[in-house]
Image 1 (cartoon, rainbow, N blue to C red):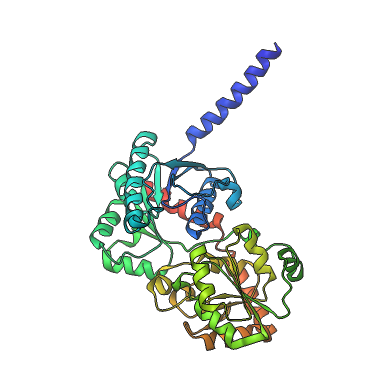
Image 2: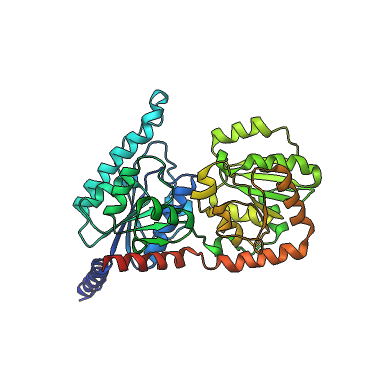
Length: 405
C-alpha cells in the first residue's frame, strides 16, 4: 500500500506538471552570440527570457554552441531564475582563426540560422511564438512559422531589400526607441499596427540595494580621497568614454574617475591611450552582479555616448541608462536623441556630446549642487519604475497575443 501510495503521489505530480506544460504557450527566443558572456546583448537575452517565462510562457532560449564560452552556469552568471530552458545549437565557430576573422561572424550566423530552422521545424508547432532580434534566423523561420516577432535593436543601413522582406513576413516588430519607429515607418512603409514601441528595462531591486556609499567602497576595497565619478560598460568608440577620460583630465584631482567594464583588447588599448591620466582608474571587466556595488559607491554616474555614430545617437536604448536610474545616483548624460528619449533636464544633467569641457562642467555641477542632484535623482528613480523587465514583458506579450488573434 505504501509503495502504491508513493507511486500514485509522484505519478500525479508528474501528470500535473506535464499537463501544465502542454497548456502553456511556448515562446522560442533566438540569440546569436556567446552565452553566457560579458556582453550586454547576452545579459539582455537572459533577462528577457526570464521575464517572458515569469508571465506564464514556456520559454526556450536558442543560442549557438560556441568555443571559448564561459562554462559557468548561465542562470547563476546572470542572477536569473531557472524558469526557462537553454538549448545550444550547432554553429561554425571560426572566431579563433585569425586569417578567417573577416568571415567568422557570417559563417557562424548562417550555420546557426539553419540549425534554428531545423530545430523549429522539428520541435515546434504552428501555435508557438518565435521571437528574436536576429534577422537571418527569424527570416528563415518565418518561412515555416507565421507567429514570428522581430525586436529591432539596430537600424538596417544596408541590404534594405532583405529587411523589407523580413518586415513583410513577420507578425509584428518591437522597436526599442521612437527614432527607429518613425524611420521604419517612413522607409519600409510598415503600418503602425504592426509596430510596437518598447524601450529596454532594468530589475530595480538589483540596483537599488540596501548599502551605503561607504559600505559599498569597503566591499570593493577602494579608498578614494576624492568623489567618485563612475562609468560602467564597454569601451567601444560609440560609447564616448574617451570624452569622460579627457573630462577627468580637465577636472584634475578634484575627482576620481572609475571606468568599469570592457573586453581585454579594448581595456589594453584604453590604458595605452589614457593611462597617463592620474585620476583615471581603469578597473576592467567585473561580473554584472558586482555592478550595483560600483554604482552605489559612486557620487556621480556618467553616460558619455557620442553623437558621431548613428548607433549611439539614434539606434540604442542603453540598458546602462536604466541601471543608472535605478541606482539612485545623479546622472550626467550627453544630449543626443537616444538619451533624450528617456532623460531630460528634470532627471539628469544633460551636456553637449563629444565635449570634454562640457562634461567636466556637468560633473562639477553634479558634485556641488546638492539640491539639483537630489531632484534629478528622485525624478529618474520614479521614471524608471515604468521600465522594469516584468512590466516590459507584460506589454510586449499583450502586443504579441493581439498579433496572434
